[in-house]
Length: 113
Image 1: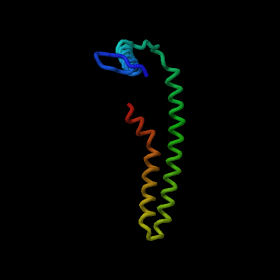
Image 2 (image 1 turned 135 degrees about the horizontal axis):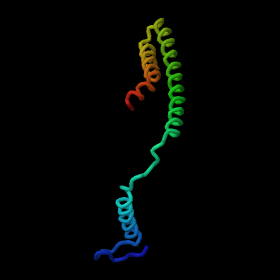
Image 3 (image 1 turned 120 degrees about the vertical axis):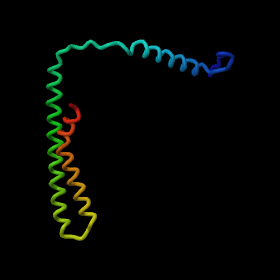
Image 4 (image 1 turned 135 degrees about the vertical axis):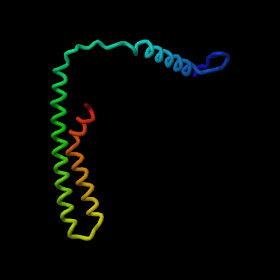
């Protein structure tokens, strides 16, 4: 590797070019970062498509949460016949997770507005 003198010190050419590139990159970000984006004010088509995708994902999450809740309730009912405390605690955890998954779309909409 070639060495060059830079400020009285010997440095490799790769290090000098790397440092120069970093300085140029910082300069480009500083100059072009505050450029405003002039977007069209009518974004109804994009918003409706994202809302429909959100509704589909929310329905999937809610249905999975309902299945998880139902599984937890049945597991809790079967654990009542045994004296195993860990089975009951796992059932309660599944019930809580199912409730949270069922209410997740509602919670997200309450937070976002």
